[in-house]
Length: 249
Ligand code: SAM
Image 1: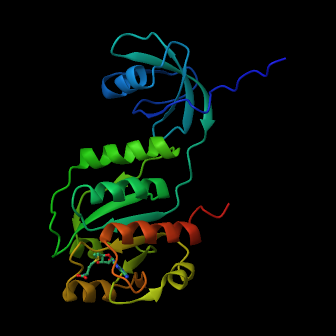
Image 2 (image 1 turned 135 degrees about the horizontal axis):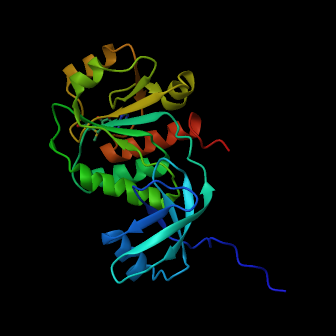
């Protein structure tokens, strides 16, 4: 006898929605998301779509009442609980479009909880399009199977970041002029952490001194080569996830 095919199929598209999810919940989908499901993924009545909203885990939903430009999905069963997000923030100076998009995408894939853009003296970019960056993170979360999207905080000046730094959170400062070896620094501070990465032009001497003088700061070396800001952010976040985050199992 042929085996009953698994439902939802592994190929079911994943979609981030704002609506509450739960057994029997009806989720209307329109606009770009509907276009993606109907025209790109060719979803038909009865087909499965995986939904998440950052609060209720992941739900398998069935497509019903399909119209030309919108559809309604009905939640059937929970397929994943809400993930436990490793307590790791990325504090990064804004960098050029394209490069910052890469950081948003990779930080989401790596499991970062919160991204804080930090304005420093040598930033060549001083404005960010939060909607565009938010969309990048949602797309990355849809693709990688996350059930939570990182929080994108408002941009803050470095001075304010240091002044308002929360107690109990280590600030790993990626300092191209030298610091502790990454493994030593990360394993010596296993609790809540954050990584601070400078802009294309690096930090000024005054900024470096202020960061190094902060009681939560742990200067970190990322090796003998000067990495681009986006490489530094992605590489150092990956190492934290491996040593202190959720890559152990
Ligand atoms: N100031 C540097 C220069 O002018 O040569 C370039 C800065 S680098 C492109 C951007 C940021 O990446 C730095 O501020 C630092 O946070 C991080 N970074 C890059 N390479 C690093 C390394 N080898 N060790 C620690 N941090 C590094």
